Amino acid sequence: MSKFPQADARLAEIDAEYWKIKYPSLLVHEARATAGRTGDSEMVYGTTPGEATLELLDFAQAKTDDIFYDLGCGLGVPTIVASLVCKRATGIELLPEIAAQARAVAEALKLENATFLVGDLKSAEVSDGTIIYCYSTCLREESRVALGERVALCKRGTRILTVTHGLTNEALELDERREIGWEGRTRSVYLYVRR
Image 1: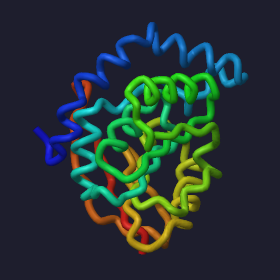
Image 2: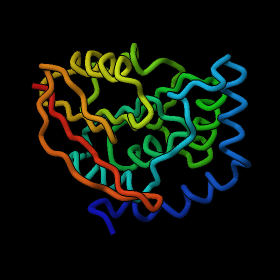
Image 3: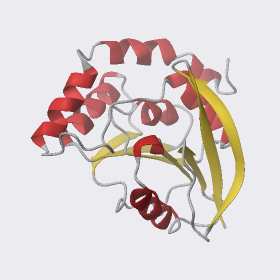
Image 4: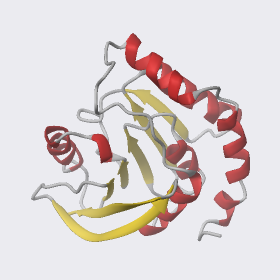
């Protein structure tokens, strides 16, 4: 049980909706091929489960007035879960077919404050965000630098969560690094605060 009982109560419903997606890894593979990105090491299939998302939101001290962004959101589980905790949650995904599938899940769950946009995490407009999340495990160094530059445009006090890799940007202060487990593995999660 997390610190967000209203979200805990809907995790089973969210999981059930995602189970309706047949062969999600194949869906992502086909979307990559359509976009001419087959073999792109930055575009691997993976997700952050609902329970782990709640732990991440707790780590970032999420509140009902927060504006959440998930950069490179894929099928959007963190965005969906964050919409139950935060004022608004937006997933940014490069592949249109994947963003459309995430949007369909939000609609099926009747979540009016969960939005999915097609865009690149390196150039997405997130300056109004107060919590930014990026499962940055597969990002190359140059992409992590661009990500750092992008989130440095957010207002002071914005919390930024990255997985596996930290960010190096003078505008960001590392608040804490924590080990969080999901899908049978422990991952390093970095929490930064915009100075």
